[in-house]
Amino acid sequence: MTRQKGPARRCSWRHCSAPAAATVAFQLPNLLAGSRRDYCREHTRQVRVAKGTVVVARFGRRQPSQVGSADANGGRRARQVLPTRRKGVVS
Image 1 (cartoon, rainbow, N blue to C red):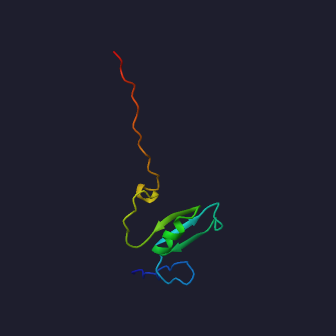
Image 2 (cartoon, rainbow, N blue to C red):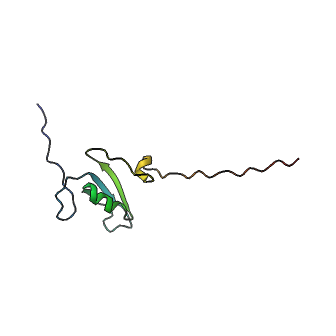
């Protein structure tokens, strides 16, 4: 027996009928802390900049990640490599 696909998830943003592209979890200090919502690609970009938001799942086609975003490094922040200062040998 073949399982049928369920209906596509829709964006949780008010009056948006676009299909959801990601699930966003909210943590403190966000007022929606403890909840998760599905958002389309455009609304995910808007919500992601707020404090206390974490993208926990993406669905659909993979989009190229933006340079410098936490998602580009597997959720880790890029560490800046600083040049080391070496003591010169005085002869």
